[in-house]
Length: 132
Length: 82
Image (cartoon, each protein chain N blue to C red):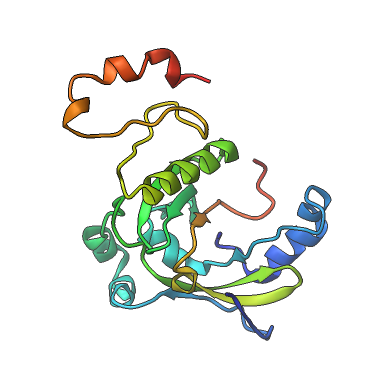
């Protein structure tokens, strides 16, 4: 979503993005002329008149589980967004019985919060596990 | 999900759905004062927005995606570089 019209989205997809992604961008490129939506999400820069690079993870109930907002010159890390969605999906599937510690990615150990874990995280998780 | 839209001469706009609508018609100053902070764990504000998807113009409503995981991404503009 950006402040550009859907006509400009089409031209960008036709003329440039489709040369990077076969068949063009698969998802909807949304138009937020005037920044009405961006303003509510807190990403509309009133001075510049454009939206920052904001990324919101919204769960199947419509709740925001996480967000990240960057100023324009730095791009996002798609792998990190996917990792976060995978972690939120795991938490949702286990109904919160499992939690994903720092550095978790699919296949790595989860933690099971509860009275037996109090003061014992050091036995279950080492700082080296925070890094890939 | 997304409903197909006609392309007319007007440049279509969307906007928030529901209670926030009144708030954004206030002056810029008022909006700043009253702007609700986005909070994790809280409802994502619903909106309708026109867009382009795979050869068609569409209208997208966020709440139509209930039941799915959604990544909503904002960016400064088409043809910006990163």
